[in-house]
Length: 253
Ligand code: BGC
Image (cartoon, rainbow, N blue to C red; front, side):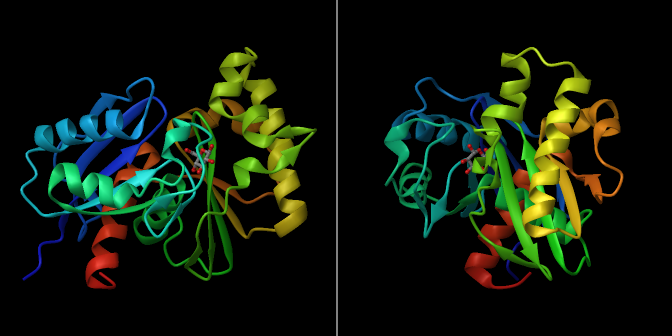
């Protein structure tokens, strides 16, 4: 029988995280390992860190799912807002498969987190339009309609008040402009109202490290919006990447 324990990796602007995921339960089997993202985060440098990460997890399987912070189409990176520009045009799957010897499937990091939340978390069984937004170095998004993903939605790159949204209201922007939680919450509310105006999601799920602080900034979000935090916080990206790889290779879990 095919094992459902798959290694999920989440490449981020500051850390590269990974763990073996039990896809029957939607849980990590071992402790999450986090290594620093190299600077500059060129394809070769990141591939070296991924190789080290795979070794550290002790993973003996032959399939890897990799969440990556850019538009990803057929394994190739098409943007690089928070990673080295040399990634544009790089086939992530070929590169990671080459250095690890394990077949790798790549997906946008927010899409990975969204898959995980839809399957195991707050999006489970949700019909209609569900939008997951990850708040981190950038703003990632994952869009689902009746449970089916529309990949590479990139709502962090909407324009808001003349800014690219993720420059206005990500965690990086919060630190850069020294925002209070109230200031951040108000900006984030503007962002959500803008999204609501253009696509009226039935549910918005917030993920990424900063969603832990929702109790601080959530007070400033309009009560008419249906907003919740991700069940798996920052593990969703790892779990979703593993799920994506499994289903890309074997079909629905
Ligand atoms: C990228 C997205 C990514 C998000 C979160 C954005 O800058 O354009 O592809 O999902 O950051 O990492």
